[in-house]
Amino acid sequence: MDINTVVKAPEGVIHTEMNDEVVLMHVANGTYYSLNEVGSTIWSLLSSPLTISDICKSVEKEYEVSIDECKEDVMRLIQELYGVGLVEIVES
Image (cartoon, rainbow, N blue to C red):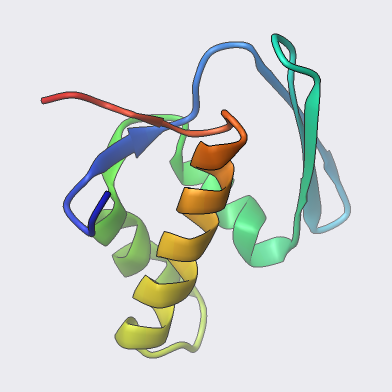
């Protein structure tokens, strides 16, 4: 997985918004995950396939963060979500 990888939220993930956070549940494996405000923004972007680079650009515009820090943080979150089945890679 790298910055040009296309990712999206998989089918079978239930989510609910609570204040500025989102709680996710993968129905098939019962995995729960809570996302803060920035993570919630990233989750909303995952409703359609995007490159990790495009996600970073959107996050960078909305929050005051350098592109390098943004790439590192977004990549870390995407990898974590991927590891628990809450993000899938879209094959091109």
